[in-house]
Length: 113
Length: 112
Image 1 (tube, rainbow over the protein chains, first blue to last red):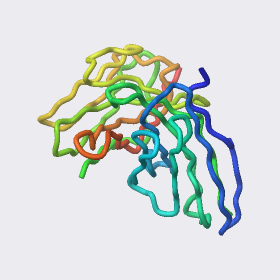
Image 2 (cartoon, chains in turn green, orange):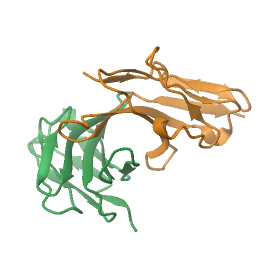
Image 3 (cartoon, rainbow over the protein chains, first blue to last red):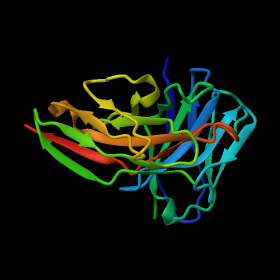
Image 4 (cartoon, rainbow over the protein chains, first blue to last red):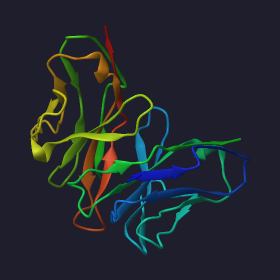
């Protein structure tokens, strides 16, 4: 199993550009999450999904959109990129209940200039 | 609202010394807490969860509801323990779906 995979690893965007960060998992997990990690700030939840077709906002959803058309994939869309979105983005998944482990992807380092 | 606080951003100890990484939480419900760890160039991964009352790699953590703390301890630190440690709290289970709130993290360095 590949676990949780994320693409791309690195990306530089210009202000106002858009992009989609890809996340996929092959563990048949129901729950998937997107976090951003800013230096010294820990991880902040952007969006999460409890199953295909169901998504909800986390702490910092502004400027982002998500979709969950399949169990495996959970892409994060940035519209009109801003310098404040410069961060490292992590995708994670877990089985039905969070008493179980949350598995993280390797991260995408995004810079908006 | 829930909150997790890790008061030390940086912690440095010598090999063989005891280490304690502090975590305090604020939550109106019954707390369920985890410690996650990120070693250099590796993914964030679960270290231990309080509900299991387990010891992983010599680390233990006890939930103290009176002090609202979940400090991570190890009696004898090793160089390979150097990493970023995050304390995390589950919430939302009863409503819209379980999710974690993370603390800001503590970078532990164990010196030889």
